[in-house]
Image (cartoon, rainbow, N blue to C red; front, side, top):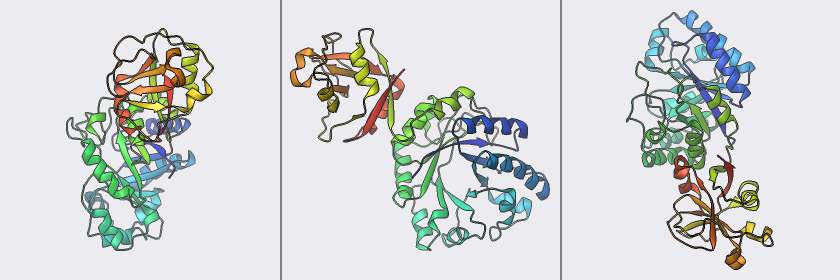
Length: 362
């Protein structure tokens, strides 16, 4: 499934012109999806419809898909019913996210709405909610899954729970989404906003590392910035991100040679299928560079987790093999050429047998 980047906007807490400027910038950076909050509506039905319609129409011209986040109180406030989604269709939205669940049959029926609106489910529960809906023969292409975000520090999901919840959706081929947290964003749906990530471990990380992590799990198709507004720098950083292959940022040592940098940065790496606990081995490169000299340097101290090492001239047939250190060890036949940045070490868990990966220079 193709992967997408998304942003969130909160029309009840922002100015429409600022929202439009934000959507334009994000579009230029390759974003194509919008989470639009409709959890707080106080104006009348027609005023609300026109306000959202104006913003969604602008977004559509930029190529966005827009999912409206709705809660039961909205239906009461606007005097509309889940049995008739005309109101949402008339705003121009592409789908609605259900903040609460029903009996399974109701959700399945909603996927057959006459407007082809996607019905997005809350993924942040480790229960057989989706299975129940699927037993009622839901219209699967119109069923999405999206995790929650958590505005209060310390309340977002732990990774193992997130993984179990996500697998429930991914195994059925449902399109999935989760939220990351802009370190610049100040706007969210509530009066508490300590950031809006799905995973607690992400709350204070740079946006690109959060996104790399979610994509690396293989469980999330769409990564959405939960809070508004992300900085231009953050949007550009995410726009340049490789969504389909893990790219690890490496800081080179002063002594790293031109050949070692070339091996590291220009080659397509993959981990050998017959793995070892001590290192990730990228072995194909040694064949290509078997005749390239590689004098010893930075080879006499103990290597640490995340160090990038390359076999030197003393390593025989293993000369110019690249490795990422997973367990501290010493071997003077290897040169330390750099290290993966500390905040990216969590990504090493996702370099599995045969995983394809690349490096970028920090």
